Length: 295
Image 1 (spheres, helix red, strand yellow):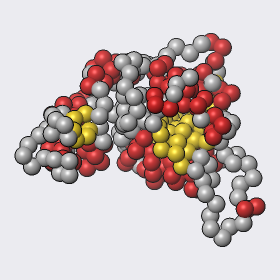
Image 2 (cartoon, rainbow, N blue to C red):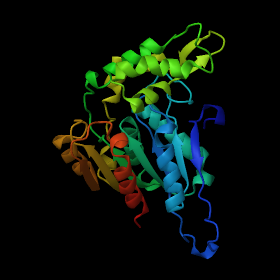
Image 3 (cartoon, rainbow, N blue to C red):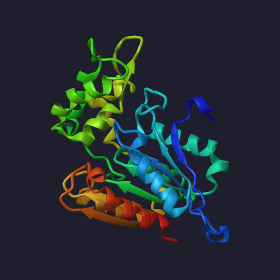
């Protein structure tokens, strides 16, 4: 088992009793702990707001993780789903006493496939799974989806100048990134979370390893591990949230999901692209809260 130094980094919210509410009115059977898994180039910050919200409203423990090669977690040359799933297994084992019994898993894009792969392998350890715009199928990831993001990140790497320092670098980096990202504030901040300022080199540097900014990584993330016959079908409750215009969950992927999972619900957001979680946050927050909270 891994030691704390190379476990996935996480933000953990513990439910607290509301003031002036009697203890006997708190839930007698707390819900399963919920673990949130971000997408490619994201971090645990993706789900900070939602994980805090569910902890408060459903009175359950929540964990928002940095997957390997992302955020503040460790770097590893294996960027595949089996490696990320193994990391998740180790995290759950290490925190078993704190987590308690089964877990709910909520994943976006890449994180959705990690959640599904873990669930297929550990069905007795999982209560429910929420997958935001991805499914347990192999799917080519269009390069134009990340072209602007990857170009912006490569140009931010090594950014320096007489007016750029530890206090000003974020403002300077944001000014450089936004025009390349169609002045999209949310996407620009998403990109900036992958950088830090190096006092030693006096320049902006990537926090994540450069080898994940490659087409080879995108090819690997388009895959899905082969599921052993004995793990099919999965009986756990699964919610698939589909962005109608992204192509990640097309008709074939939806049909295949129904073949692999006996209790799957599909919710489609018409007119939405892959950034469905950002664009439809309040609706998705309510949808996940209802799904996780349902007995």
